[in-house]
Length: 414
Image (cartoon, rainbow, N blue to C red):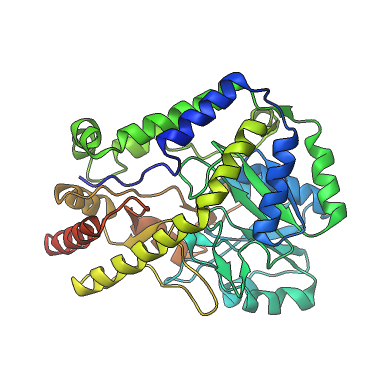
């Protein structure tokens, strides 16, 4: 069976990171400052701050922008629950706009439909590695004095209009988890172009504590375990049999075991989230920067080829949209939609391809996050039908043909 993913960092990088954590002085220092500067140069932005995670980066940014309490922030209804949770914890109001059924991204029309005099920012997501077209959003937001804040958690290194994603709006949030296309073994980055905003972010973070060695060891060991578990021999000996026993009417056992419980942010959870990335992570990030473009190009080639093979095999429905005009698609995920997705996932596994339901939700259906169930019908349908096929640089040409063939076979099984 072809595993659904593999970690971005290889065993050499992981072991080097664990050695660094064990033996070198660990706190934010010169390596962290150099990493922030290198990130900013790569991105073409003025300022970058190494932060604990994507959700904390959004909370920090919203606090630093000093919007009035109760201001409205427009998000795509189909997103990671932590983003509206961060908005609410910042004392602001998340407002959900429906998504395009082909790209799963915000559209100018859906955003315009939810704007009010209280709207202060729109948060488009460059979802699954495909850059969201921002020019139409900026035409709406600019004249109204509404900020555009880019969610780049799944698109680090992607281009848009001759620039990097994350350098088009007022600011951008990134996350570097161990399953992303770039990792610092947890952590993220906040990019902006304003000195005073940057200064307020740095000031807020002075109260954060440095990452503990135990936290970093856990990330490194988890990465190593994931790398080992996704080696084909070990995966097919130990993981695949578990997946094949998963229910056909719900999430698989791996997803259930490792999925994050939906919850809001509060003072108690923030005590756990308020930590500062350290130099060991920064040094790992510097190494990852050297290979980012090559890995992204490998993803582009494989994603484009898999699209071609899918169409050749007759699997044209529910495929991901290619890059838009002046945009990019680095295929962080290869998302398809099928009715009865869990049953379809079971059929795919019988044909030798692992698949994941992903971690995005129709947040407009979550009352605890300020949602209004049923208000965003496209987002609701996407959450019900979406599946993520294997897509990573380690896939070979034979793997891509096998995935397309499995999809065609699973379609025939319907």
